[in-house]
Amino acid sequence: MKQVFVNVSQMSLRRSALGLAVAATTGALVAGCSAGTSSLQQPSLQQPGAGGTAATGDTRSASEIEKIDAAALKASRLAVFATATPPKGSAPYTHVWAPILRIEVIDDKAAAQTIWDGGTEGTVIDLTELAGNGSGGSQKFLGLVGAPVNGDKATERVRVTFGKAFELYTPGTTVAKTTLLADAVTRDTEGHPTISFPLTKPRNLGTGKENLVINFDLGALTVKDDKVTPALSEGDATGLADLTRQVQTQFVGTVSGVNGSAPSAKFVLTPDVTTSSAMIVQTSASTALFNDDNSTNPTLAEKTRVRVRGVLSPETKRIVASEITTFPGDKPGAASTASPSALIGAISHVNPDDRTVVIDAAEVEGLTPTQQAVTVTLAADAVFRSRGGLPLKSEEFWAALKEKGTPPLLRVDGVFDPVTATLTASRAKLENTTLTGSHEAEAVGTAKFVDIGDKSFTLATPLSKWDGIASPDDKSKGIPVTLTTATEFKDETGQFLASAHFFETALKDKDKTVVHVVGLYNSKGVFTATRVELTPKPAVAASPSPGAAPTAGTAPAAGAAATPAAGATPVAAAATGAAATPTPTPAPAGIAAPK
Image (tube, rainbow, N blue to C red):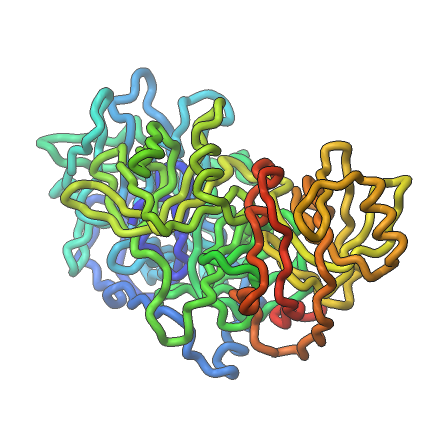
């Protein structure tokens, strides 16, 4: 795949300047070449298998999960990144999509260990997006994997295995020229091109403190006789600690070993691809959490299948999650409910009448961007979500795309037709171009600690409904809510009311007033409300015991009012009418108390 989506489940992703991928396994191979140069004349290589099979769901036993979790948490990891340097002068290509299948490290005994394996499809990276324009700070990094590495030997070389061809776009063209790798590039036993390069200094990469940057030198990339030869070397890690210089990545897999309390929890993510290494994901209050469908109450619980988007920390070697999508419909061993193809990019054209958008491919999954501009048709029943993951009405979604200013970044999931180069999407979500400290969210709970002077109150836990966030357990102190002069108030029928009336009601019915809050949830775990609605008090639900089934995907009971676009975005919320009367749902049991 292409774009930088990281399928921790291994990737069938491709990336342009926005995504990522990850995986890992081990194998023994032969390599070697002169220091400082890429190897084009390696011996024939025996690869360790065909790259893994995508196994959706998790059929492992509890003991197997426990062993994997323990090993994952204790392992000394190596963080691996990709970057690129631009050519001097004018760039001959506007996009260079490079398909990467495997990354290995090779010690002084010529023994190779696979630290990233993308399976049969791998990941496709747009190298020009990583290279930037040559100015200071424009170069980007793409986090590929935080993988365990053998720590008893020094690594001398790195070997990268590619797909058979690059997709090259010259200035002024919108259709790629598919260009095979040069015949001089060594092939493995399966016919895949492989290139190796030496480290600037042989060293032990298994200490848990090392980072490996793989640099693609676009200035040294050559095309001769319609065949391409890339140039690779160990890159400069300067600026790696600045997470804003990383393009976000995507990892897909199964959750286990959840530890800590929401919103700051960590868990082990086991990739869908069997050859991948388990990785550790760190969440925070800045992490948006939502279900893939239109259901509420997303929960991180054991064996939940998720898609994590974020960046790779060069210090902790963990995935720092900006958003997590759960797939409540995915059961262990069953087929995935996720769409087979996905695309992220800036929108260049919008037509609400025929429900189409044109997206300039930046990250792709399950498709090859042989045309840079992809026409996307949104299905009549497509699910729309805001940047924070809240559901949007169709009219709100199209209005957001037409807003003035920088064209929004959009993610679409659906079925891609390679003949027409079009995608029919069943899911569409607005995306942030950079990491942000706050995002849209909503929650329903009892208001307590109401303070008229400070214009604030606290949402008591457990919550009866939530979206965009993980619900804290019932031991937490609740979620602080700040009100502003722009905050709208509504009664149980959806009618607007004055803020004074809200406080009067909340103080009169102390610790019994149930409210629906929509707003921005910041990195400190505080809601700044754009709308507060009074709701009928739900029946009391007992908190589940640890290990209870997750509540993700719980829908309102029959007859209960559906959440209005209040689940939509704070911007569009004012246009919403009816108030929500959600079915009470206990707090999630998937997040345990800190150990």
